[in-house]
Amino acid sequence: MSVDRGKDSPKFWLRTQKTQLSDTLNKISSYRMPAVSRPEKEKTEKQSPSNSYIRMEQIDKATNLYSYSAFLHEVEKYAPPGTARNIAAMDLFIRSLRPDIKVTCQFNHLLKSGSIELVRREESVKMHDCMCPEMESIQGRSLILGKRIYFEVSFQKQCLILTNVSGLHMGLDVMGNYLQSAVNKLTFRAFEGAEYLQVIYADNPLNRLRSELKSELSFISAAQLGG
Image (cartoon, rainbow, N blue to C red):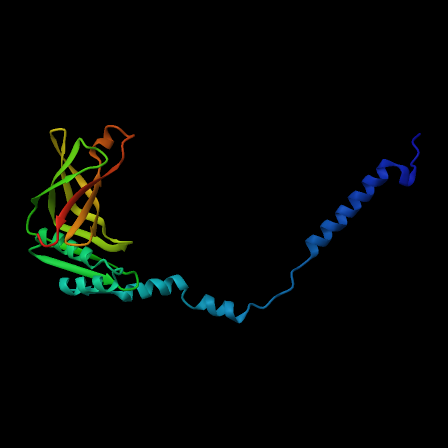
């Protein structure tokens, strides 16, 4: 016959803990958060357009179409100090592409960047000798110009950059074999005097054969602004 020793019995603690736990769960389940009125500020923010929407709307309104000469003027206006010759170098490059149908230019003064689309009558090849510092066995020999060429113009430190390029390919001499490679980006950097460097970034065609090679190569050439 078992004898319940009251508080000295282990079962007493079990019964007490179960009772306390049950009471606690009942209190939690029956508790209701008091109704709180929503602040007027939050209501206003919900009803008004978000900051990101307003920002995008401002960016859209700040983007304007320009003639080519007016576009160059806008780029000069927002260029970092001391980089005006970079714009002259870009101008020489764009003229060498010989757009003979249409040139469409946009610039956004909030983003300090723009875009250019060149429309040409036919595809053509422009001689362009340049060296590849990453792989000496590859030489840049020409630029293949499409009928429609597009790029975006922006600044990075002392360089003017053309990104999101389409319609341009680099003609490559790879150990005596002629290959074409899509151009992704161009940079222009002018120095004291008339000399400037132009760097063209293009896909590495050898990356398809050997994945450990760089996927993109740079091709460097130097020229004179007056030449």
